Length: 85
Image (cartoon, rainbow, N blue to C red):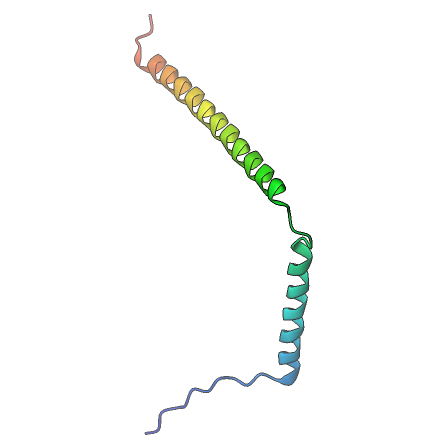
């Protein structure tokens, strides 16, 4: 008994052309997204500094929110446990 030979499907010339066209379109989109001019070292350092300061600020805000939520949860739990008089 003969086993069937698995062949790779043939791609028509039109399909191949569309594939190439999409690749070219994607390349153009990527080139538009990347700025043509490079940033100077000073601009890169400023961007790095601003990014790091922003991360610190967000982190501190998150820690403050977590502390407030934790305190509120503790107070809520304490009110549930304490006997009402």
